[in-house]
Length: 129
Image 1: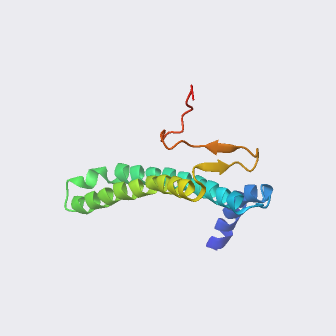
Image 2: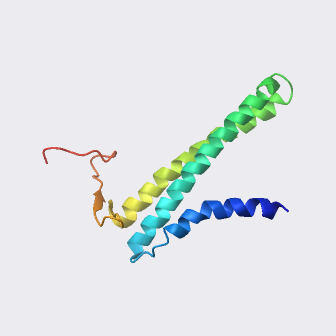
Image 3: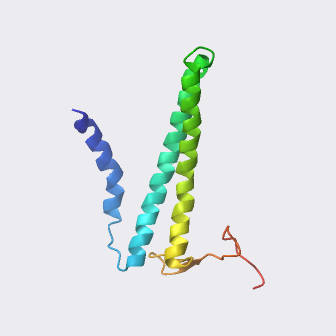
């Protein structure tokens, strides 16, 4: 019964993947595709986590004064830690990209490469060089 409700949502979410089903020609293109999918999935999970966290705060804010309040405080503390770990996944993925490919990632659609400088952690363009 639950599968009948979940299956249309999975199909609807997976439909864009079928439209962009061009096979990667090299390992680097495959790795870039996987990282892009993980990056998008991470963003969706972070937004969902923040929404659930603030929903939990709004529904349990009146329970802070009674005996169950200590249990709620512990859940909220661990919620902040989980949100921090979820956000840090982006940094971990960026570290893996820079480690595996030396900071130069080929864009498979245009063929150009995005250069990241080790002296500029934000990837801002540097003029006069």
